[in-house]
Image (cartoon, rainbow, N blue to C red; front, side, top):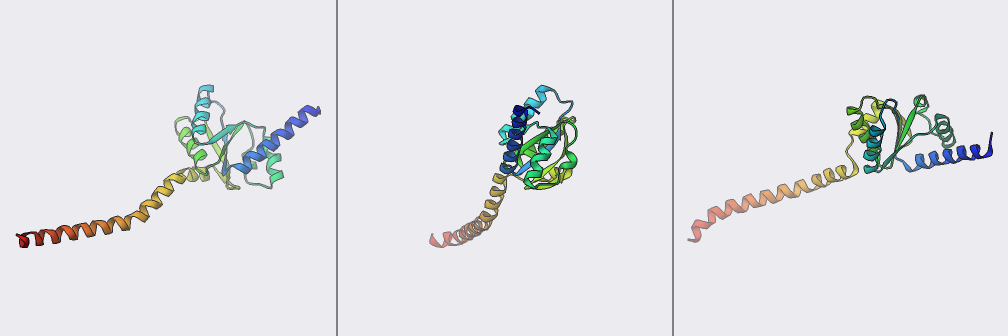
Length: 170
């Protein structure tokens, strides 16, 4: 084998390993039958969500997984696959699931979520989880609710007492 080809393969494996380390979730999708315009649309959508879709040879991905000690997605590594690397846990899967609703040729096979292998149904469940910002907003609303309710109670008591004391002042 040519030394340049061997070095290119080693570089690709190290690139895959870097992507696996930096990503909270990695999705494996089959993109056969999608047009170039549809793939471009998907890539743009993913870029907005801080995720990226890349095509690698399955053997190189298997080698990177083996070197990192990750298991769970080997069964999905057949045929033409694209790999979606997402730094936020839910961003990539959510974008893929939404895109797959309108483009039936995009098939979600499975993936890795925080280093554990999941199937397509598992990725769909991960996609339903609100984003980090959404979860923080919900948490703040939960913290704010008792204070808001207390303020409403104090206000209604003040209005009620104000209505009863106002005629006495005249």
